Amino acid sequence: MTENLLQATNYIPTLGIKSWAEDDRPREKLLLKGRSALSDAELIAILIGSGTAKLTAVDVGKLIMSAVGNDLNALAKLSIKDLRKIKGIGEAKAITIVSALELGRRRKETAAAAKTTITCSADIYNYIKPNLLDLPHEEFWIILLNRSNVVMKKIQISSGGVAGTVADPKIIFSQALEHKCSSLILVHNHPSGNTKPSAADITLTKKAKEAGLLLDMPVLDHIIFTENDYYSFADEGLL
Image (cartoon, rainbow, N blue to C red; front, top):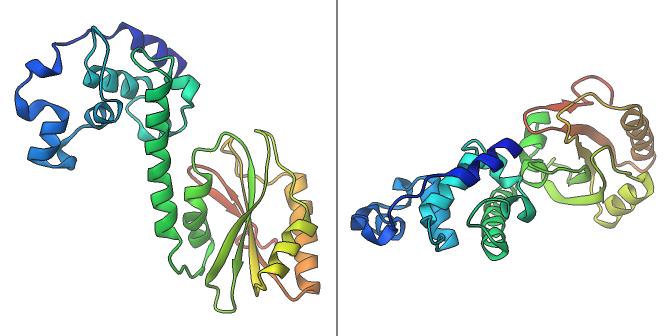
């Protein structure tokens, strides 16, 4: 990605947008043909509003998409600092792009928040995905369920570094007791993409399982989340 960012500074400019046919200009094209007719670069051009003296807004949009290999998931991982390395992107435009992507993420989260019944580990993975996708650091979450295994609430317990985060069973179960759930699920992500549980993961799961049995709030699963896969302690017979 760093190489792509460097290459993005050597893009050959095109004619100004005002010289284009009306239905080729991003805003006019959206009005005439609808949002689905626009490329990712054109949508970004509408967000940033303007280019530079030598680059149109669409040129800058193409630079941005080129820098991430035309992968919107990779774009969502770029920080404001990363975006500002691209020619034509200052702080204000970088903030606009990051904000738009965050709105998209929240839309997914809102859709997932409708009454969700957990029936298997795949349900857990898909439900928590909007919260953990694209994160460069570890976070630990719990999902609280009622007696029908319908999600009551999801709560972030801790946030840490790339290598790990600390989750205290006392905090986990204080939240579970406060919300009077019937059962709960543990979830944390591995930014490295490795789904294999660490010794600390196994120890925490064992402690949480024991505490849940004492409090009549069973831990139904512990999911290790990665961008493309997951590990389920329940599926592996470890709960």
